[in-house]
Figure (cartoon, rainbow, N blue to C red):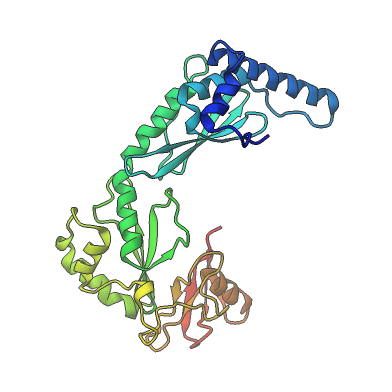
Length: 318
């Protein structure tokens, strides 16, 4: 039932509390009503039985201790709930709680799993929520570094980054991209990088980084450091003119830019070709050419679909 239209929020709360001596009394009453409702449902239907039993009074008391304004959502039988918080940079984070026989499981979108150990007789949801809030502050520099990276270059993958994602695949030049893996605990140190493109196209960039690695400054954003190392301005998708070189990477097998959210990441090493392919497309293409394809382990070898020069491909990630 929605909130009565003729009552403001404060008046509505006062209306609810009428007839109760305290909030605790209201919570106990609400818990009993929920349990009675649950029992009636069980009597009405023998075919739909709950998978877990929930101590409603305890859950309601836990939520009350944390604060009802922190509750984002809860399911009909109180076995799953979401608690929200805002960190010092005003980012919202959600703690997903799932009760399994009254023992909660916790899920977050943090880049590393939160070490939450539940002791059945002593732990409280309020303590776990406090730990969740403390952990968010630990990753402030990491999230700041990733936001700077997203704003300062053309991100190819992931298409819709989450706060859990620790990598970015960014565009460097036509048919050249760079995968960057950032350490959440040390986000501004030199990251793990993987070059994507033909050997001819990426070799000059790789050599520049090797020759100028001492230029890296841990006090600067990652994209700024990359520009200093490579001595280029990183392309921004929103500022590229229609008349400039084509930075869009299209798979030469399926003729699409993205396949299941991924951009083409395998490029022919022939300098006169340099065509790009999705790993899945190239792998399936080479496997279909029975007469000209050979295998070594899971890796397949064959001819480039475009220039017919030798090319190899590892199987796509499952």
